[in-house]
Image (tube, rainbow, N blue to C red):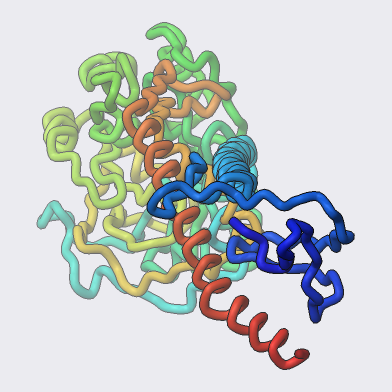
Length: 463
């Protein structure tokens, strides 16, 4: 390329042509900026650059030899490499940060889900201000039963074990659903029954009668021990036949009775073990031989026809009772009917002991029912709990039936869904790639459509 800023005289000397910018910076078409250097007059002859035939440049970069095109192309290649490296580093940084965030969510969310989230409902302020009368539309199962004055719930729980209602609330709930007698049977303790009885004797005389008891809970059987005022120790989680016989004998020595609870629930098959919920549950015949006093033939809305027929076949030795097994307030389905000479606990227990009972059954349940408001503590910690629940979805953790003695009745089984986890990380990778494309595309559009036009306008305005 022949520099047009110099004139060559006839004698071979060169002289710089005057310029208007005084050596100011020049910006070439490649966008590179350089200073226009002044060259002093010299007598050295100027050798014009050789131009190949046809005017084709001989530079390997497509420009004229020595005109700086090689430098521009090298800088562009270096800039492209830097941009590519920056993009890759940015992508891997986002990927690693995403994995770190996920691991932190797992580390915090799962423990909170296991132990830290308060109950969703705030049951402390619930009121039960209605009154159902089941006798107005139901008849006893035994049509020849005759008159009755007691509607008994023989199985319910309070906050003294795993129920959500206090003893006072449990009694108010029972009255609202048509009961005038209850047997409070918290797991492993008579404390809830004693508290309920004390409240009823002071505040609810003439409205409801409380019979004390507890639910003996282990990995072989659940039994209501009724008519006792002292807690019987429950141990071990899987007692032997002789240990169960000893419990039954002790209750009888204390003047109480033993009622076997919800056999269908106890014998329900649990997966993945493919065994009964309560393994090695004694048979009805065994329990009859061991001296139990009766069976729960309706639990919640499950009518145990097989056990009912067994009781009917041994009606001279066994009594049939019903229980709501209330842990959470909801519909009531069954009421044990008794015709007692008085509404005292001893009079009702005497009728049970003499096996003079029947029951009302409404499989659809009572209305109304109500849900408690969400607790503030749940709303505060639920997001973490829900995060833990989400990640729990990538594995099945089966612990089995709780023994109420600090253990479980089955061995824990954890099945990790490796394929699902693989797909999670693949979708995470795809999501990051898509977001990166959107980010850089939006950035390019912002520069092209807004930043550069505004820059050109601003410089033109200043000039």
